[in-house]
Image 1 (cartoon, rainbow over the protein chains, first blue to last red):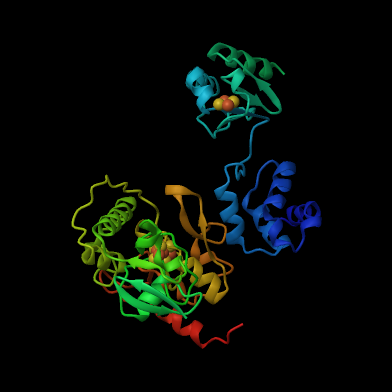
Image 2 (cartoon, chains in turn green, blue; image 1 turned 60 degrees about the vertical axis):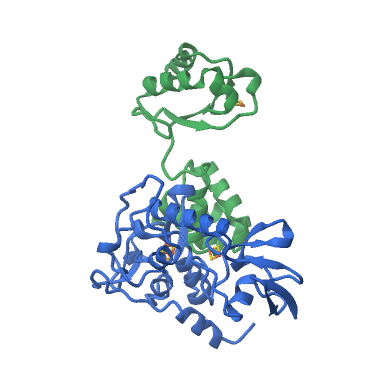
Length: 155
Length: 233
Ligand code: SF4
Ligand code: FES
Ligand code: FES
């Protein structure tokens, strides 16, 4: 394992060192800073907290929130919850897929966007809804969704 | 002592004993799969379901439900037979259980249960998942296509061996038992090569290297033998 990663994880997890019950918190924190959780990072987390690697693997693979692959510059979370779905989230999804050339969970070839589906963002009144990073976009149409991405691409 | 009734017979149990333990002590058979003596109960396979007549016929897993005073347990009603059969069919449909080419053919708990419960056909479409086999370990082979996710290997590894190599990865129908961070078993940094998982596995998913079709016999009772000899804490 690259010594740098191990040291970085140890530094990030200083408050959790030797505390197995903080596993989820610890993974949350590391992913928040590093963006994703590749194997060497998971190994370092296991070592710092004192939990078996198998347990880290169980938690990382159980929760959709945790990622083992790097994400694009922007993360799109398209709501596929019931309200959004009946208001046309399916068609928005088709447009995003086509615009980005990736399926749910994928990252566009230019590394700019990762497309994720989520269940209810708690903004059903604005359905269909998506979040791009921390920004919420409501009352989407396929055309508007495309425009938003194009705007972000231009920077 | 607790007094309860199982299939009309009066049975005694020590406080803390499960319905299954009380039944076994009285010589009453209840089918099980994920339960293994020596390991903690997990209650996941649902083959040991029984009815408690004076709880409105409520279904409870016998392996994980403590015996209670005055309980009237039914272990073999028509409803239970049908439910257990369906559980088995679902297990068969989920992965690739092709007995004729399996190392455990003739020595398999899943196969034995199918015979015992009269499961001669599967009503559900087979999923045929096509999972990849792990033959990287020098002593053992793991074929997830035959795994029933009973978790006996996981518990044998953590509770008895203390190595904690095996864990459940993923969720739902995509769950897989995997070593460490999911790499090849042969490269595991925690596996001691003790083989307890192989002995605990009720089917042909975990097997010794080099055994051919129908040659894999197992001794799952070693887990109980080992734990009984341990000093109680
Ligand atoms: S490998 Fe065997 S013991 Fe482990 S969960 Fe699968 S069927 Fe059960
Ligand atoms: S269903 Fe989409 S925000 Fe609630
Ligand atoms: S043996 Fe009781 S639930 Fe599996």
